[in-house]
Length: 98
Image (cartoon, rainbow, N blue to C red; front, side):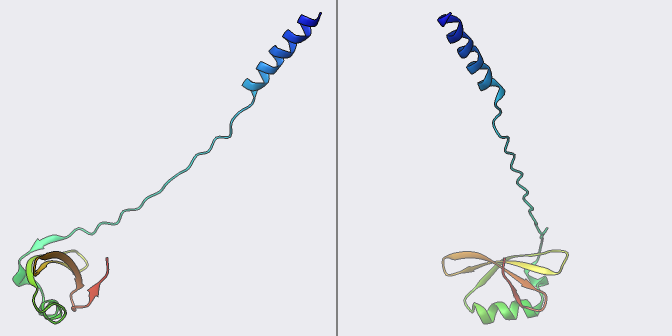
């Protein structure tokens, strides 16, 4: 009789562990990547307002490459001394932080 109660307790205890469900957590991660499509242009095609702003802000800078997007924003790859970097500007010569 004792064995019957013990086996019933073990069976019922085992069934309850299968009946319990663990909480399902689903995390949805949305990432939005906005990438402006810049097309390479000749450095001579950069507006004078942009080149004047570049000369004023970085007098020793050398303009290596220039790119333009559909919103008339310019990406300038420059070299100052031994450092290489990119700057972004509007057509009127105002700088854009990206």
